[in-house]
Structures are given as C-alpha cells and as structure tokens.
Amino acid sequence: MTSKNIYILAIESSCDDTAAAVLLNDKLLSNVVATQDIHQKYGGVVPELASRAHQQNIVPVIHQAIDQANIDKKDITAIAFTRGPGLMGSLLVGTSFAKSLAMGLSVPLIEVNHMQAHILAHFIDEENYSKPEFPFLALTISGGHTQIVKVTDHFEMQVLGQAIDDAVGEAFDKSAKILGMPYPGGPLIDKYAQSGNPKAFKFTKPKVAGLDFSFSGLKTAVLYFIQKQVKENPKFIEENRDDICASIQYTIVEILMDKLKMAVKQTGINQIAIGGGVSANSGIRKTLKEAEKKYGWKTYVPKFEYTTDNAAMIGIVGYYKYLKGDFANLSITAQARYKI
Ligand code: KG4
Ligand code: ZN
Image (cartoon, rainbow, N blue to C red; front, side, top):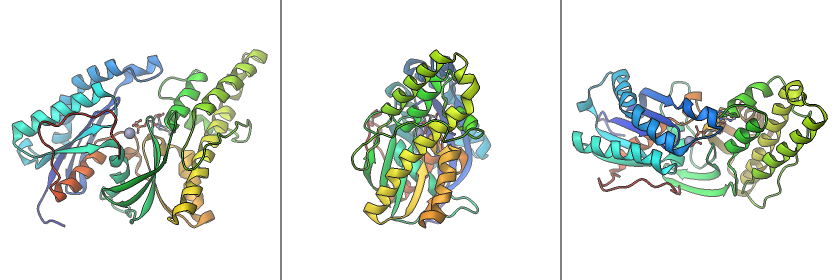
C-alpha cells in the first residue's frame, strides 16, 4: 500500500443516474447520485431523455461531491469515469466531461468498466465490513445485466454464465409494469412481496443449460397469468397484489439460487459476493444469509448505497487502477458494449 494520499473524483453516467463521488485512497468521502424521475411515466429509460438529464445534472452533482468531500478541485489526484457498458448517449456525457476535467486539471484519467465496478464495490473501506477474499464468485444483478463471475484478483475476472435475454432487473420491472406499477418496479415488487405469500402462485422456472440465465419466459408467464385472472376477476390484481409480488420474487430468487448452487459445485468456491441494483432486494439478501447456514457459504452483501448505480464503486476501481498506473489516453471513447 502507498502512503500517499490519493484523491479520486469518480463519475458515473451509464444509464439513468448521474453520480459523482470522491475517495481518499479506498475510503469514501462523498457519494452523490441524481436519479432521473422523468423516465417513470414512460415505463422504462428513454435514452434521449437520459443523456439530456445527464447534461443538466453533471455539473451540480460533481460540485456537490467535491463540496461534501470538503476538498478543493486542485486536491484531485486522478479522475475515474465509466467507459461502459451502458447507453451510448449517457456514457458520452460522463466520458466527455471526465476527459475535459482531466485535461483542465492536468491529472491522469482512468477508465472503468461498470460491471467490474459493481463487483469491486465490496472493496470500499467500511467499518465492520470484511472484504471478500480471492477467489470468490460474484453475482452481478442489475437492470442491464445478470452474470456469475469468477473473481481471482481485482482485475482478473471470468464470466461463467450470463443472461441470454432479459436481465433479472428487467424481469422485476416488466412484471411490475404488467401489474400497473411505475418504473422502476423492482423496489415496489420487493416492498409488496414482504407482506405476501411466496407460494400463492406458481410460475415455471426456465430450463437453460449451464450457468446462463433466461428471464424473458417469466415475464410472458406473468403476463398470460394476469390476463387470464383479470378476465375472470377484474379486481384480481388489487385483491392479490402482495401474493403476486411475493410469488414473482420467490421465483426470481429461486432461479438465481439454482445457478449459484451450480456455480459453487462447478468451481468449488463457496464465497459469494453480490452486486448491482437487484442486490438491494430483500428476498435475495435473506436467502443468501440463509445459505450461509444451509450450505456453509460465506456471503457478501454490499451496503445499500453501493447496490444501485453510484460513483463510489467507480472510484474504488479508479483507486486500484491508479496504484497500477493504469491510465487512459485523452483520446479514449465511450463503449456501449464493454466486456469484463
Ligand atoms: O444497477 P442498477 O441501478 O442499474 C443498472 O445498471 O441496470 O440496477 C437497476 C435495477 C432496476 O431494474 C431496479 O428495478 C432493480 O435494479 N432494483 C430492484 C430493487 N432495487 C433496485 N429489484 C428488486 N428489488 C429491489 N429492492
Ligand atoms: Zn449498474
């Protein structure tokens, strides 16, 4: 470890959250997120509106992050930004801003892979939080991705399985939309599920080979089920909301757990870390805790603020890359599809 004080300013703009954070080495000093409510009424993220909102939010969000960290712009050692994966228009706002700021302040620029950041969020220094030890398996579950990754080092990661169609967050959000809930519906399904019976309704689990995931069938199953029930009883959704949500959430958690169990068996690794927006889900958190007792796993669940998109996780990757001297050229461009 270095004795130097490294201040990383991190910028995240890959989807619909404009975020900035400041880290001092591996410790978080500030973490600011501006969520874009504009998408709610459209039932999903509208890329054009997202990039416009990023442009409006980015300057105030960065100022706030610097102010809250109680530092001066000239203290910044390096600037880390999300290069991809994500929506091109959204990524371009953060990328261009990071490049100009790095140039203006004459500090190094560090590019970060968003999915790698969801995994390395576990390495932000926190009191009473032990970091995962290598090797471990990471389950990254978000609105855009579902992956099981074998992590052997901070930057040595191998994707063992992933979604072949919808991501798990989409399964939550699209099911919620069928139930008439606003976007993003994942947190609402979670909320209502807590007072419902998870075994009230049964949805079939998809059969997908190996460690890959499929969630589009579940969304269709929910749609047909709801259409059929509503035809018989127009009040079916309002009368059964909690049970429907609990049953959908139960099925999704089962699908994730089945693949995790398979991955543990295949690799012999029983340390599991989760990341991404869906790791905020109470069902998956509870089931993972139970798995510690049931299967002898060691599980790592991030602090709530590091689950959905944030810049703190971009900053911790920035810090590790800074230590390696892994800097980006100022001619770097955003990359919508960017593998781990
Ligand atoms: O990581 P994230 O903020 O953005 C992406 O990179 O996609 O993840 C957003 C996703 C959305 O689909 C949202 O519905 C889901 O995470 N989500 C949840 C919960 N909180 C957020 N899904 C289920 N239960 C939650 N508590
Ligand atoms: Zn994300």
